[in-house]
Image 1 (cartoon, one colour):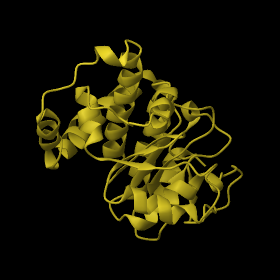
Image 2 (tube, rainbow, N blue to C red):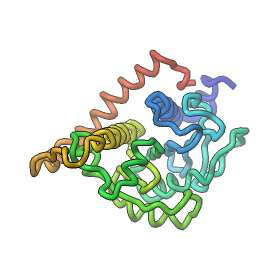
Image 3 (cartoon, rainbow, N blue to C red):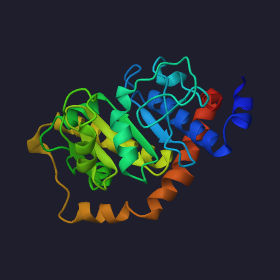
Length: 255
């Protein structure tokens, strides 16, 4: 079945649009070098209120993901439709907890980058020494590592730790962001990962050489980077630009 017929005949236009955006996010993660072989996941709710979600087929690299290859699953990570693609249901444990608890969490992105893991293992977490860290850090939560996330009991603790935040450092594990759109979750991840990378680099100069921002600046940046303005930046400005970049490089994510 062609991607076009699948889009037109097997799902709503709204679902297809989410599939295209999620496939684009997978490709962008790979393009940035944020992927970890076939591991970690990016997930999104399927519009319609049926508690169905989209996730990657577990046998594909992120650079191979397409809109039609994404697998539709339920809250337990079980495929809704017949599929030959394996699905890592255990890997959906973290995502399902947040999707269930937060109506605004239509997208959940989780990564294992070296910089993200490094900062997640630092006792002080994300330091407010760069602009991107101040943008990401005002909305950050922390969750202690409990081993590979296969224990469903962990979901309650994860949700409690996240609270109303949209960014999380999973201690000794990696990074996580949520968003009401895939674009918003992606931009939050971009700021978080850039902040982690900068922190690892600046700490090589030694802590004695760090210059802290003046008092009150972090609070000012928080006010400047919250509210509807950031949604406009992600949904209407940055995301369309990123999709154009993908279209120039390889538009097959849309198939």
